[in-house]
Length: 299
Image 1 (cartoon, rainbow, N blue to C red):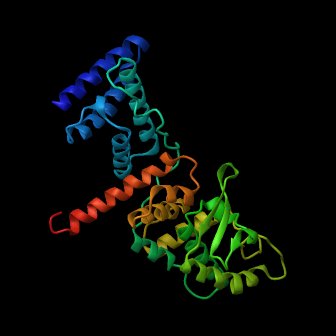
Image 2 (tube, rainbow, N blue to C red; image 1 turned 90 degrees about the horizontal axis):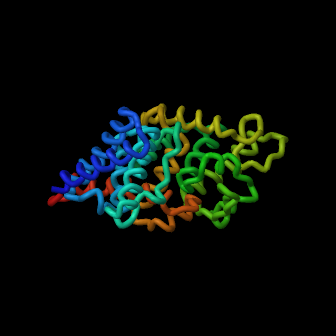
Image 3 (cartoon, rainbow, N blue to C red; image 1 turned 45 degrees about the vertical axis):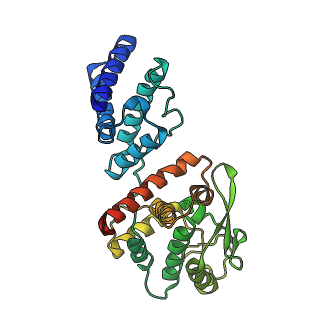
């Protein structure tokens, strides 16, 4: 019954937007395809589209992310949903518009791959040997996973922002917002080795405020760290499509998997809007449900 009702609502919406805007057949077909996908997903839960909540739409969008949908396709689906729910709210069919404050994904950027904890361990262990560069690379990987910093925040980190004694970093993120993030014992151990031995070797007689420096003594660039991640991902056998954001993504997801609350993760990531952090909740929840189904005797 819910699916039949959903299809009726979709057809009514398509008739209305065709009369209002004279949309092309291709655009109408795209709307129909996007909305029927949502309807099919909700139909399995016996839910009508007119009564869907924001949380349920986030669940659906997280489901599409896990299925590998591109950012462009995800943005188009959300655009279809926005227009559909504006119509339902305007006609009094839906009490509220659940899409009113949902953010579109950034076009052109790949959605981050979720790394398992074992894959992260393999990646962190990929830099080998006691060379100055190897020690630096291990320290950088440990730091970004321990803190969830953006790559720009990591490469721009200065000595004055690092308190190794307290085990904290002070980060100035987007919009000039400042936050304090703990480092953790593992990251501190590798950072200490880098700061005491490898960094002085890389600097020589040069002076720099940057925490992480190149073999020439200059600050590391975002592009250089991107290449570093890709190289070690290949060495570790965890894929060659990872980006620095993959470790930030893993940081948030693993915290939530281990019981961290959403507000704390929001503060650690430096998100101004909780809805930006909320997608990680759904990814983590899906992971926990899959583990329960696989390992629980009554799963």
